[in-house]
Image (cartoon, rainbow, N blue to C red; front, side, top):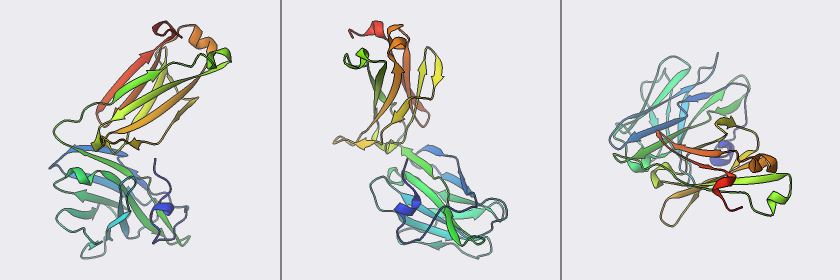
Length: 242
């Protein structure tokens, strides 16, 4: 996940405030030509103007627009305008960003930002990932590696799942592991996505296990999801020469 918006928007001084700003949905996957909507709730008792920002991994953060329910118009940043981008509100604390006629270059993380007047601080949402594809999005391609022979001499071992993600994903993916069909949460860590020369993204996920469990021939499954497309791959000791 991208770091704090404080590191992304250098033009603003922002710190974590008391007001809880939430965005939904966390991920939107749409095809070109469709319309994307994402919501920002400022939290109970907060009614301020809301700004929206676009962040492409590795790129410069861009200010899209600012809107308040009491204003007669939307104020835009450079390079952004209606009818492509607009905003409305559902209540004095609920705001929506609308992006029309989606194009592949609209894929990004979109953040809302507001002002907490009680603490004199900027606060921001956790971001909505927008993935814009053509008519189809290929599923991730997975490779799972067993523990090394050296590791198996100790009590701990590591499984590695490497996923190749299609370029429209921008490296946004959800990774989960199961052991003998049961979800696993402890011992899991994942790297940030790295773009390859062919424009795809690679992400690696690691699962630390007990050597004894590997020797019991448990089946471990890595599942990677990009929007509605998911792939999974399983591995166990009897599948390997190790």
